[in-house]
Length: 158
Length: 158
DNA sequence: TCTGATTGTTAGCATTGTCTAACTTTATGC
DNA sequence: GCATAAAGTTAGACAATGCTAACAATCAGA
Image (tube, rainbow over all chains, first blue to last red):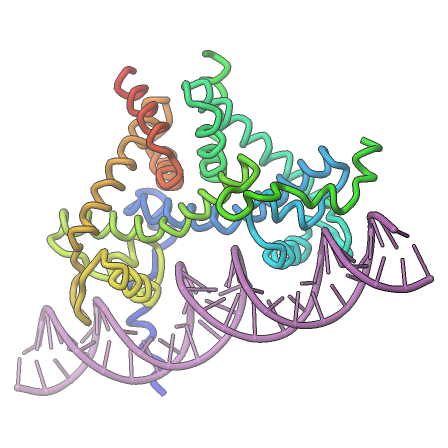
């Protein structure tokens, strides 16, 4: 039918990718997009980090334990693990423990590193352990490498 | 580690017998739950904060502008605004600008306060403006009042 | 004023993440 | 070695968030 109409709507939403590079008209739109990206990665990171920890501490990672640690129900874990397997971060067989792939292990290491830097930083600011843990969990997915470097510097300096 | 491998299903499965209802056993489970709560509030907070800003700067908040600033498409904004209206944070009429309710205005103020404290803190750590803005956007929804106080103290001290 | 461009909404789809209920598989313990 | 308990999965619901395509309303300029 009317296919020319989409052109009119298109340009309101066109971010003009190249024009945005030199002089970011809206810094915040970029930031929001970054946050949305981070959000989609968060769950995977939390799972992978936790799985690595369980394997380290208990020798294996079982769905029931993952569910308990994350505070969600087993079916939620099953679905999430399906997704992680699809994405190549873990391997698993039905009714069996979960294992990390090389990629998953690398991601877990990276997450653990970030988590610890953020946690140490918050503690060195003078925050109590419980609040520090809680806030670190939320913050760790949203700090850039640059910020992380400053956090690490501050924590070791103090 | 050999021992842990032989753990039975029952061993792995008992987090806290009695307190499973409202009180997760693990400190981390609590933290994860907090993060999930924060996540469900994030969008509303971002919208409300942005709407307040647009009204302040331009005298009104229009969906097309909200979409551009957030980097999403207009229908996404329509849906989100419907939800905000349902939650009593904004008022609106079809095809018209958006207004904040008293509750929405209060939330916006609170968000702006948090945003600015986090931003000033990151800048005072020595971060560049662009990264600071990006990280603040992600971090602001995940800092406790206690952490915020420490951030504010650090920023004003330096 | 009327017509076309801009803005906004509706409809419909996909994905994610959560749940409960019911089922299947595995492990335990007698 | 079998019955039962625990663990895990499947099915189905629901809400949020995003998208495109298409339709509707508003606005602005000739």
